[in-house]
Image (cartoon, rainbow, N blue to C red):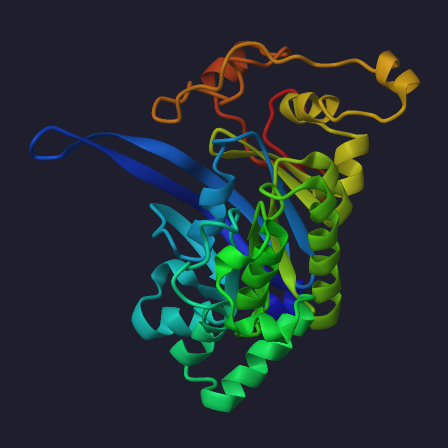
Length: 326
């Protein structure tokens, strides 16, 4: 698969349902369908942007791909091997090639150990370096992310949010991975720092040939960094295509509504353009509506949308969409 199609990750009908337990005996009475049948692929060396409003399942997709959650169904192929079927040492060795940059730089670093120990811990866990060699690798990684190697003896509370996120990036690079899930890595940072972190991620990608799954809700950032973009809503994929195609020719009504919310710096254009205001609230993921999950808020809804779930299909070359009207 990887050699023929240049695919690094292939996700097929991925599901992640969290059980709802009640009573003294903790019996399951339902399930929160955080991810419900998502399919896509990530090509070697590209950045796939994953967008959608809060609670749509973006982070769950990233964590399930890395097997931080065991999927309820579907397959995740990484370098041609199904991760869903791996256990023990085989899964552990695969995880060397997959890493994650977490959203909150304040919560993702252990406050009780120094940043040198944080970055060097993966090297010790996998037996790659110890002692002086580990120290040299840690210093090299700190320089890579723009931090002074003398900071290795300091603790996380001594750093700003942007510096902590750089430490998280250095930790993710320690094992020389090929695939990194970036889970909203700039959402907790000041705007002035966000551009620096984005530029750092792009430079590292070019230098080491990294592949990113970039999760975000800021559509302007996603357009800047991504090669292709996938839009999610209520645990399902709505649309997937090249970034320029998505912004110039969105097919799904939900994508159109999302793009209409992006502010335009030109006041003349901002006054002329049409805003699409969605009415109602996002349905409960434990009880999603029948048919298309977006039918309760869609301005182009018809009877078929309320009855039959749309098929994930290729409407044009490389442009995938799940909509009856597209």
